[in-house]
Length: 142
Image (cartoon, rainbow, N blue to C red; front, side):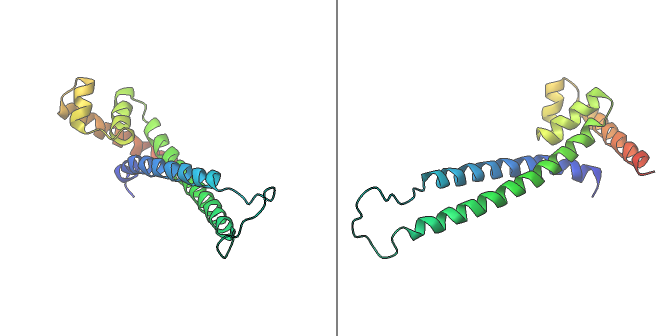
């Protein structure tokens, strides 16, 4: 995987993390809404199967929540690895451009507008940042 591919993955991973967070929140709400059988009040005849469906749903919700939390942890590890790549860039301007591009998901034009540089300057500084990461990775591999 190239440096740019690793960096592009950061934004997609953030989107996946948000989706997992939302799903975990939904599952927890479902789990909290499931009520157990109360034995304090007299039972009235109900449909066959009583409340067994609630137990089954509760177990499924718990299993799904556990899996979602595991997936969430893996995504967070990927995200921190990508952010570490960007933080390894020493030049603050180049690092900021990479953050805006890969963490915030901004286009080169948006970055140029925000930083008051030409788009060509943003492209050039972006490439410099990528080269700095590649150099650091080569040094770490030696």
